[in-house]
Length: 280
Image (tube, rainbow, N blue to C red; front, top):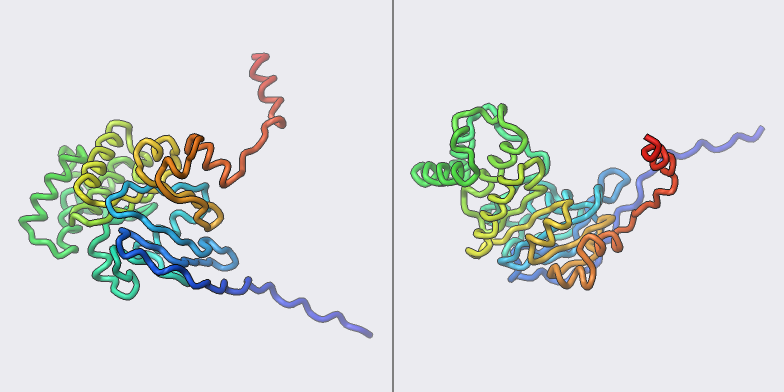
């Protein structure tokens, strides 16, 4: 009697072998080299190289699951890469995390806040955590509440804030220590148009003053109008990066994005939907 050998359990793919990346750019606000990150059998980021010029308003765009949030999490010290390095204004983020992170302001995706504090208390807490003195924290708290149009809700618990208000108080918390680089994951999601316009003005003034802003967004028109530089990410790779004009060429940024990442679907199969609406 011949017995079949037992099937071996599925094994994850082998770890990627990192290539020798180019040296980081010490003049860049953020310099990413050879970043890899795998979750189980899924490789989320596959050897990403990216330089964010100092003083730029930099947009990061890509389809869902492209690796944007994972890349930003590794770039800001929230997630350790499997391979690769991140330098913040020339400082190795993982070798000298305290020094590098002191210059960063971060608004992560799906941020969880201490929402049993009031808006004013949350900003005060964020400033004190950064080692700032109480007088400076108090002054900047009032300035940020005014700028974000939250003065009337300064004593409201954050748990009772709307989604847009929560986004604004989280952004204010990221800015209170006047970082050199702001990294914002979907900062305009759930924010009303008036507040979004005010936030854009604040961010542009910040860049004009020498700061660097990195934003991820799904809204191509917003990125095209707001940013000086852009990178398109797809499948864990940086597909294109440079100034907005360099990346889009003769196309709109949205058309260039679709050309690079693919995925546009034909809709002939929905003919029943068109005929239904025409007969009603």
